[in-house]
Length: 298
Image 1: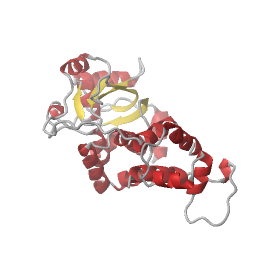
Image 2 (image 1 turned 180 degrees about the horizontal axis):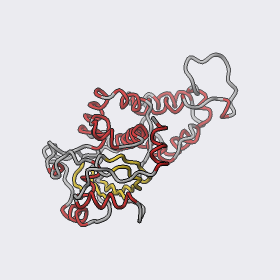
Image 3 (image 1 turned 180 degrees about the vertical axis):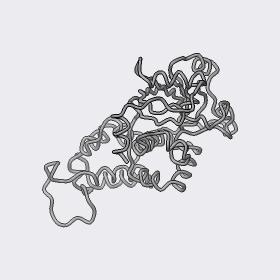
Image 4 (image 1 turned 60 degrees about the vertical axis):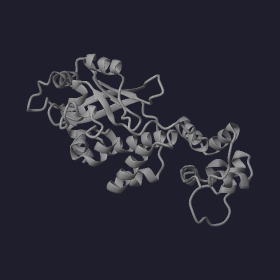
């Protein structure tokens, strides 16, 4: 039984009420949300067919059926793509298990040459493959600068987020960052069902972090490629940074994560200090409105 597909469909059925979809609700319900027969009716498929699909027993499901189910469940674009990944997984050839992930030399050279931007190269599991001085000092100054070169010592941004106290203190809105990280990891796991190391990471985090386990069970899905993050850096204080994630155009599934600051702000000055390694012991001045907002968040 394909529990990933079933869990995802059940989680989305549970989030919908018959009334909001124009369906009459009859009798008491043992569980919240739509019944299978109601969803099958909305999608225009038989109850038997949908049940088999939810149980992972239906092979070669068509794109038209998946699109109909996605519309019935009111899935967004990321969730619809995730549904396709789970229902029609692509079995990729496994790489040599003895071969460690590595960033291309040209990519590493480009990252090192980038100035004014904190840059990190990651694989699909969020293992750090390379970073420039600014990226290292922003995200993990307590790690050795050359740690990405060793597969045994390589930082993993998701593991750090949930299990490393220093990383937890780095994010002002840590819970939002945790939710975003799990939703992104769900999307990756759906695209790479045969990745043993990814499965091991998910298992480790599920065992060691109750919050990760709780978030994972909700089956969130989100393709996080840009936005704003708020840092409380131990050396340069508060920073509001924009981030962009760029997928490498090959089949490596490597990504480049870049953080930048608005020109002329204290955050830009702080990033430059981090890049030069000339970090002061005291934090930069924090605007009162930001400081008050942080206290209000608790």
